[in-house]
Length: 234
Ligand code: B16
Ligand code: MG
Image 1 (spheres, helix red, strand yellow):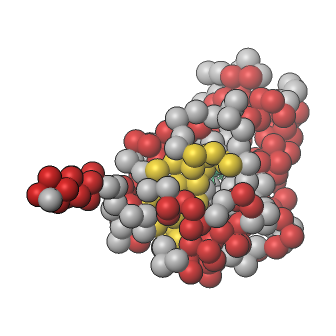
Image 2 (spheres, helix red, strand yellow; image 1 turned 30 degrees about the vertical axis):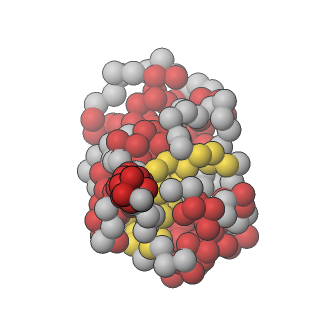
């Protein structure tokens, strides 16, 4: 009898903490803005005299704006050719085009299952948090009328370190009043999965198993995610 009690105590002690916050990346998880980033970066590359392919664009997912520009210039064989001021001007130009494209977005561009997933976690008493590298996240959320679905919004204007640094997710959990180990992150980019794991959080990948690694679970989109099952995975 005593042995059984001890066994039960041990089982209780090793149980992970329950999930209390669901943190969502924006681009590639809630909405597909990668195509607009691509249109704007391709336009910049054309002006610089080289072709930037969709495959090249894969390298920019989840990466900050300035790092994206560095990768783009690397692809065009133009690394190190520009001053910091010229680079800032190019990034600003790309962003002007990008903002023009995303300003026309509406609710029809919300990815399948995103609203149901956000509402589903809320119904289970789980805080919903946005953890995006984008400085344009508020514009996108407003156009898509998604602001009310989030308890906490952390975007690229609130952090200084880009993913894979965990800053964006740690700040999101902190503002939600939840410990990192009580948080689950939904991410489509490898940099974001790495950020979630180094924050000590569960990482749910959104994408293809042959393109991502290091996650705890993987789904093709939020339409496959059942919030209750995510909580029961603990
Ligand atoms: P912006 P996420 C990221 O958003 C994008 O995936 C990435 O491609 C982009 O460079 C980055 O935001 C910065 O975006 O230029 O709008 O500030 O996936 O973290 O939601
Ligand atoms: Mg993303």
